[in-house]
Every structure is written in C-alpha cells, then in structure tokens.
Amino acid sequence: MCLGLIASALVLLAVARAWLVREGLLYGTDRILGTDVLISALLVLGLVLMRYFVRRDKSKGKDKGGGSGETPTWTDWFGFAATLLGLPALVVSLLTLVAPATPNAYGARACAAAQVYSANYVGLTVGPLGNYARSGPGVAFSQTDRFDSGCTLGFEGYCVGDAIKDPVAPKGWTETRWLLVARHDEGWGRTVARVLSDEPEHKRFVSLSYVAPKSPEQNLKYLGDEACEGGRARPGPVVMTSQPAGGGVEFTMETTHTERVGVAIALPDNAIRGGSAIRQVGSKETEANGTVSITWNTQSTLPQLTPKRSEPVRVVALAAPCLGPVGSADVESTATVTYAIAADGAVTVVPDAPAASDDLRDKLRRAACDTERSGAL
Image 1 (cartoon, rainbow, N blue to C red):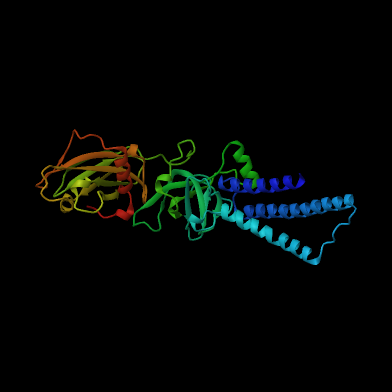
Image 2 (cartoon, one colour):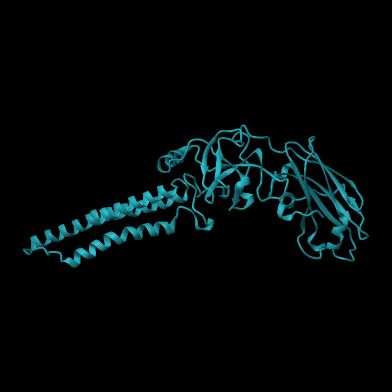
C-alpha cells in the first residue's frame, strides 16, 4: 500500500510539473530546474523508503517462518547507490524532453522571468544592449526591466505607441507597435504564476522594432483601448480616391493617427502569366494633414497579364495604414477601389463592383505594408 502511494505521488508530481510548464504557469530556467531537482530529491527519498519497507516486510516474513533475514551484499548496496544516482538524472532528462523550459522550435532559451508557453505571440530579442521594457507603450513610460539580447519572449498582443526606428527596415520606416509581455492578470493562474515563477505584477512593454518574430504575424492582435491606456490612438479609417496620372493611376489617401500608408493590388489568378496575384504598389509617409499620394504604374502591370484577353480584367486596389514593417492596421481601417483593365490597356474605375471578400482584403492589407515586397508597380 505504502509503495503504491509513493509511486503514485511521484508520477502525479511529474505530470503536474509538465502541465504547469506547458500552461505557462511555471517558467524561467532556474525555476523549472529547481522544480526538477525537487522532484528528483523526492524520488530518491521515495526509493529509500521503498527499500526500507520492502526489507522490513521481508524481515517480518522470515521471522514468522522461523528464518533469518538476508544480509545485503556489497553488490546490492552498489546497485542501489547507482540507482539513486542515475534515476534523478533520468527523471530530469525525461521532464526536459516532455516539457523543456523553452520549446525547441524557438531555437533560443527563454528570457529570465518571462513566459513563453501559451503566449499568443513569440519573438526573439535583438536589441544591441538587450531589450528595455517599459510600463507603457512609449519611451515616456518608466523603465521596468531589461531582457538579454538573443532570448525568447512571449507576448499577449500589441498596443500602438511611440514610433521607434526599425534597425533592419528600409530608410524611413518606423515601428509603432509595442508588445505586452505575457502575464496572468486574474484568477487562480495569477496566484500560481506569482508563487511558482515570481511573475511581476507590473506590465512590461517592449518595442517590436527590436523583436524578431518567431510566430506568424496574424497571431499578433491589438489588445484593446483599456489595456492600451496611455498609448497612441489606432489609425483611423482610410478615405481613398484616384485619378489618371500619366500612364498610371494616382491614389490619394487620407487618414488619421498613422505615419505611413501602403497600397497593394490583387490580380485575378486566371489572368496573370505567372508570379503572385497579390502585389504591392508602394508605401509612403503621410503629410502633416494625414494625406498621401501613391502612383500605380499600370504600364508595368500590363505585361504581367495574359495576352489576347476577351474580357476586361478586374483589379482590386487596397490602401492600409502601416503600423510598421510587415504590419498594417486591421481590415476595418482599409479602403478599396476596383478597376477594369481593357484589352487595349485602358484602366477605368468600376463603381458598382461587389465588395472584396474579407480574406482578399486581409491578404492585401498585409502586402501593402510588407517591406519584403517593396518596389512600386
């Protein structure tokens, strides 16, 4: 009975440890290692108790039968000692394989006192002197922490804040998204995380300009006005107009609370000769009054279309406020215009065109502000 209880308790401890790590309640390399050492120590204690109970039961059996208990040989003691030394290492290794401190997919250790598992978005710190965390989304907020460069951080989402120059983006690009380091705000999880992982009570924001993504960009969501109190307002909806302009179309956009606007077009899959149907037209910084003009060189688009077209080709153009390199505002803030390209190359607006699907608009908004697609058409 005692042996069964001891074994069951050890198994439950190991399972609980793995679950707590994967749920993001137990994190930090030192904290997890300390838990593993504790489980290993309890395992050693359990083995000693098991051996004691087994030998005691054997001795009682011998006494009742009129015999004498066997005296352990040096090989028995050597084997038992080897087991005591080897099993803890085995347990730590197995726990690390099942639930390592940082998922192997991220390729770098977790930052100290930072959650990675169960985070909505994960990134790698790339600040030259580490990444400084602040109490709000901007440099005016007090500094709260500093994370080493080259470690993995988990985030809840983003707020819009002070524009920070992106070190790897083309000249003129800034990043306005500030990421909130993942934390537990309420419920029993908050208590567990603060007891087991010493989770800080204060918020910690890090600029995305010095964070290399380890998760898909679509996982990064706006946290809401309440969570982003003290930050900048989100970009307002774009108003988009167009007019012919010397072998192309000039788009004029007007919006609020944004420093850059990008434009992308979607060509029908069955009307292109090759390549991607989603193409970036370009992006520019807005003027002080919130306006910006971008020209679509339609003559460069014509060679991409299949020849001998019997019907006009419809092209959807979308303008989106840019939050930073490879990041635009939500679909709700974008604007679209549909054009028809005739066989002779003439481009006209289609005023009664059906609204573009949400899926297409989502693809276009991502392309509009993607610096990897830079190069105006």
